Image (cartoon, rainbow, N blue to C red; front, top):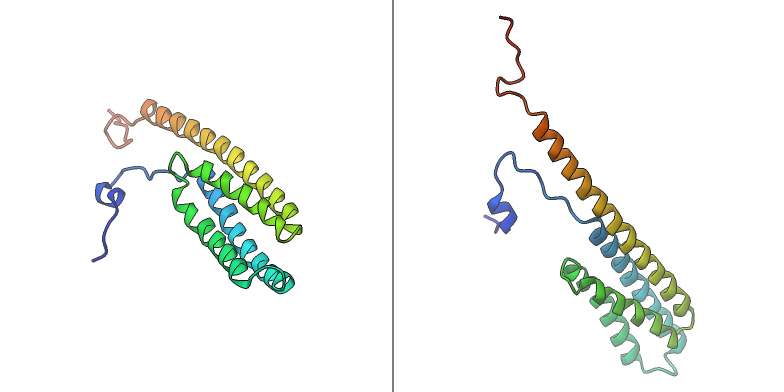
Length: 153
């Protein structure tokens, strides 16, 4: 039998499902897209600059940065996760040293990262407010315990 997570072990029928963070989903999407772009940019630099930059450096830096981008998705729920994302944005912009087009690509991804973080945080706040209002409404409008049936007598 597969090992269960803490949330799975503590789940009971009727418990509401915990909502996933929109901010984390947006941030993960941006980081994963960046990982693919960095992988392809590594191939571009390998093809265009392998005579001036050692191949080991090109592949080592490019593949490591792609792997770190993918692995950093696991840390987005931690307090330092978003800061790690910003550091990676700066590193991607810095790859423009090897391929100048990456300055533009890095800046565009940094703007996408900013938009995803800000919009995701706003949507998370709105969802939390909506959940509080829904719970309040459900408490105020609970049936009287007769299953919603009214007596005719």
